[in-house]
Length: 270
Image (tube, rainbow, N blue to C red; front, side):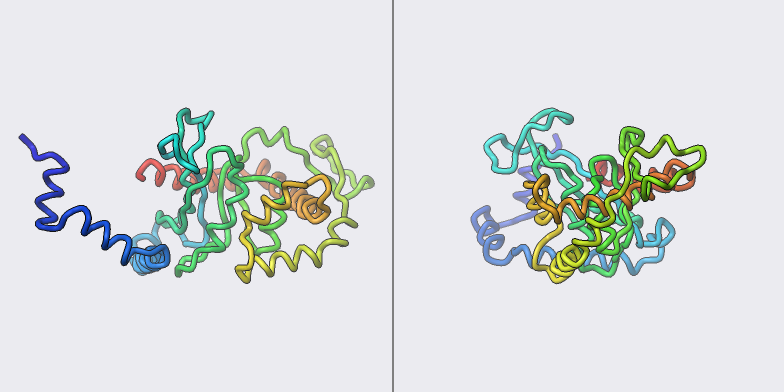
């Protein structure tokens, strides 16, 4: 009869017992040490020639997958889509098939809030400037913030026809596609708050605040917060431009779909 998992562990550990392992864990294993180890693994992986056949390392994709957790857990929530209690493991995966950043988020949050953190916190040699995601990864404030951070969003958006497209002004007319546009951009709002938006971006770059924390705080009082409205207005510009390219280019749609498949393959592997 094959040895059980517990028996194999006992043989491999020899005279080391559980308490000694726990002591080593609490004494020597730190979050900083784990992050450094992960960074070293990513950098070593990046030096191989084979992964460069799979991608340029200039793009990454983000997607979440549910992990089962005990109900009596501060992070655990019931997920309507997946069913059951747990948390979402949110991974940023390079186009060369290696995870650059990962963390757990609650089931009930909109994933777009955490989309940018993975690229901004990654300190490895792989530094993408384009990120792919699905419908959960998009919102107009995220499009606006990403643009000011120098990050290009290329997302697979479900039911894009239900989203508003914005024309530059009421006088601008488009042949054949005029019916796609339903509103106009408030350029004075963007102009008035652009200095404040740039100061926020510099704070994120300096590590004073995370992109996810900013988006959560601004979104709490979105109807009264003019800065949030300015990010949203800029995001409407960027998203409208992206959607026009998305619906007119089969090549772009194929590229985005292939990039998201890498995240889904990684989730299946994990």
